[in-house]
Amino acid sequence: MKMPDAEILAWVEGVVGPFDVLSQVVHDHGYSRLWRISAASDYCWLKMHRFPHKWAGEVHALTHWKAPLMPTLLALRDDPHAVLLSEMPGADADKIGFSPAAETQLWSEAGAWLREFHGRQNSWIGEVLPDGSPGARTTLDPTELVRQGFENRLRSGRDRGVLGAGQLAFASAKFEEGIKSIEGASVHSIHRDFHARNWLANRDGELTAVLDFEHARWDIRAADLNRPWDNEFHRNPALADAFYEAYGRPDERFMAQIQTMRLYNAVTGLVWGLEVGETAFSEFNRNVLSRLMANEKDA
Image 1 (cartoon, one colour):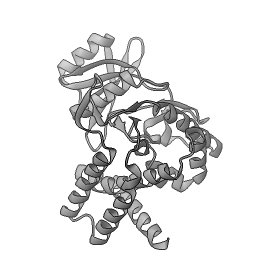
Image 2 (cartoon, rainbow, N blue to C red):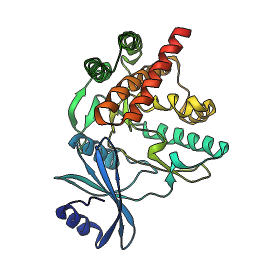
Image 3 (cartoon, rainbow, N blue to C red):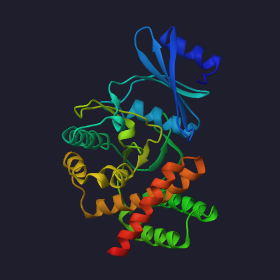
């Protein structure tokens, strides 16, 4: 286990008193590193961010978008970028062997939680600084931000040779068709990585925490609603019914936005995964793109 440097350890001690570092979590993409800490009174987590805008998004979400089941921000520092977070109850929701009823309950509670979290609206879309002011990449036009992200990854996929001519043609045409649904879409407070890997729960299907706000920013709601369609909802459509019964049923235009962001995720996830070394994630999204293309052919 690689420990934080002495300066960070001294900072943590200044916040929680004497402590022990129990474990470390490091994702392949390296956006952040986490250490579980045992202090005299409780457990907490030290999280160090690689990118300033990811740190800023998490700090803003935890201080300005506070909702039930979110960790408490105990302390923060910006040189280097780090936060100290309270430990939340429950086990990793993606690792619990739920009964069908418990899993349905979990997704219903997740839908209710996300509906509340999406309750805030904003006039601009993009990254947010800790004090709430606009970050580096912001715009008044949602289609501009979505298009920029999609086209950058599509170009990278073409240049790296990881997207074939047929995939490029399909993705470009389908995106142009779908982006029309995003014109004038409202902008909300968005988690942007909302799935069971970032939830804690108990075996009864009670959602006990939502974690990992490093991707949070102002965005369209569909950016939080696309991912399950190619994972949990694909495996068990009843979970979609439970989720949207609590979240609110999308109308035709909103569903078109979700499906457009589903394509966005497939293309960007395929390319990004290879860029950062998360090959399993890239392969998953390659399969999603293949399924989207097959569905279009069969339609």
